[in-house]
Image (cartoon, rainbow, N blue to C red):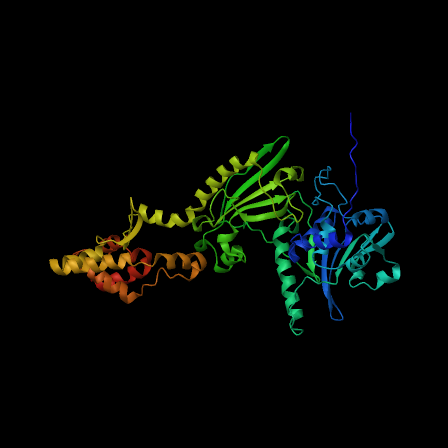
Length: 493
């Protein structure tokens, strides 16, 4: 016997639901980027971000010249959950849940107005959350032509395209000082500009296979920021790889950014980003060429100083959204298990490669058998640095001393070696490598040290003496100055 089950339809209470949707976790930058996704998906080639004030109230508008929408399409677009995330989308579609326009907007404002034009038709609708809360109903408001004419920035809407206005911006947190609110607003917009220059950099530069999209803020164009510095000749690009998941392809391309000694200080600082190289290393995952997540190894490796120059571009199609557990904000993604093993191998390869810029210079010195004052030792207890008692300058001094004085000198040098401030040096090198002076030996000191070595190597010609000291520090790092001093010390017939 089949027992019929009682059913009850329980639609969510609009007033409570709308407030919950506001707290999904969008930042202003992520919210604006979500609206731009819609513009690019609609074929826009120009997106204008406008902001200003009406009286004492700020507003933000995003205006594009895309395909626009018909009146019925606009009403459907204003619906929450207008598209099923499981439905098949165009391969160029940057959307996902059919929530972006609404949730991104509601996260920042209490009043969302959308005006669109297509094929000579214009329509406009508005969500006002205060009215939804007051009536506890999903009340969508229409806007007539007269009302539309008074909207800020509406004159920028072309014969075809869409205008999205945020007003009642209650989430901006501009502070309580009325004299400072505009400065704070400008800072918020500037942070948004930087975010867009990174997230959409492949569209902004018109990468091969993509039509270029110009994005402006109050008419000022946003320049693309390529996190891989791919145009630099000083970096390292590993061979690309294609990983197949069924009939879909995930593309992986690994980069090692240039060492600070290979580029100008300004270029090195630029590509560090606001959070620095240490936090910006790792995977950069792009969905349909739009950056989703970056600055993480997905727990496949540690964020280490020696791998801070490593960045891996991962291109995924929107047909694999379900495997990457993409969230509503399109700012979080987790690689599926089917990919993790191969990506881990790529991580190991790129991490090893990224260490080369830091070990390369030491390797070259070792190949030339350059004698450094410091000696690196590896034993069962770990790695330590000591002053090399066999360094020619130190050795010459030790040979001139009596046994007791030599013992005392050796003890002092061991103390100096043990007291090397490794943690402080590591921190300085990580944060401000360009400010570390590694070659600050003046000519007076060089001459004094050369005199010490010459005393134990009399009878040498200038060239022979130069060959002798050219592989000894600090002369190896100051060859030209050393070459100029030697004739003053050796008078040849």
